[in-house]
Amino acid sequence: MNEDAPGAPVISAFRSVPRTGVIFVTTEATRAGFHPTDPAWCNLGQGQPETSALPGAPARVRDLSVDPNDLEYAPVPGIWELRETIAALYNRLYRRGRPSQYSAENVSVSGGGRAALTRAAASLGPINLGHFLPDYTAYEELLDIFKTFTSIPILLEGEHGYEFSTQNLRREIQGRGLAALLMSNPCNPTGKLVRGDQLESWVRLGRELDCSLLLDEFYSHYIWNEAAGQLSIESAARYVEDVDRDPVVIFDGLTKNWRYPGWRITWTVGPKAVIEAVSSAGSFLDGGGNRPLQRAAIDLLQPDHVIAETNAVHRVFADKRALMLARLENMGVRFDRHPEGTFYAWGNIADLPPPLNDGMTFFRAALQHKVIVVPGEFFDVNPGKRRNGARSRFRSYVRFSFGPPRETLVQALDRLQVMVGL
Image (cartoon, rainbow, N blue to C red; front, top):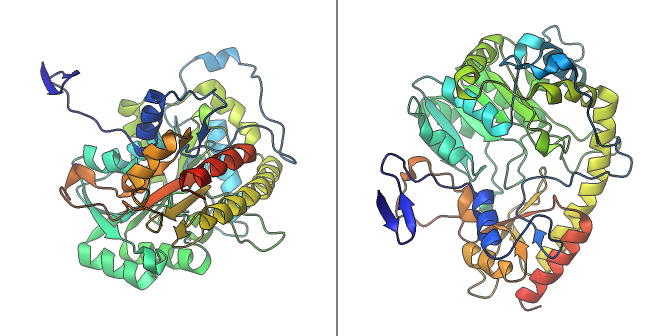
């Protein structure tokens, strides 16, 4: 047994595995007295939406009846009925009138978003895989643990609003020999959304250059600035020509867009050959998801339910978004761009009085006021720590979540205002 720090025993066979940003801040908050059920705490670091009933939304599931047949293992790719339902929903929402339609064989169900992404990563060959900075914190270990591919970071600039043109994407794919690109869309944490004509051009480019687009669409129902009366959703599935030939792989699930994070029901949608590969990976990585909850999820994926839930989420969360942005800007927090998607505000705190202009210092000071946020440096995805010694470009950023209920946001923002001296 070795020790890398006093009181921190390490077994020599095991490496030290870092925590993702949300887990780190939650662990530190717990040391400061935080408990998820303690109303004295305001968790603006959480990566989940409020899960209670919303005005106009379908009733929340409170109990389940389990079929005795569902006490057996589920097939690794998921039960057939759920896979059919997911495919039908994508066809209904995004592919009406198109000759190429998704089927159950284009869908694999898994037990959580990380499980879906891990299956995909384990299925990649010896390629160059591009990823953007900043992006989802859990990508860091995911992109490092599998040694078959090489991860290539692509830097986005806040002063340009994190914009990245199709021409720039072509240059990166061709110049760096990228065979795949992983991104969250809308982006966690910035809220930047690639949509409409631009998203269509990215799909077209992936098809032309045979570069697989691995698109994390877990926030695809949290879309802001939509036209009145338009359903607030977006997906690359809308722009795929041939569901079995276009190299577009989509990840989504009940965790964010349906507000059932505890169910751990997620899915991968893509070409049949990809689905076969990720399902095979699932057979040795995780063995498949929860069968009774997969059965229960079928009702949640009916079009009328999805539309009602999405509209209710948009009404409630748009109000919380406006509240958070206005209050934080009044405190001196700047935004490179207002979020076009997700339920996060990616704030630049560089103009706050020192030492609160540093994300980690801001986080620790907020704990003293029983408020949890996530320092921006966690989103500087750095697989294998290849940029050792480099100061993160995002040290002056903080991710604030407007996922909690409105009353929690008001209380947290009041406390932060006191903390910054206003």
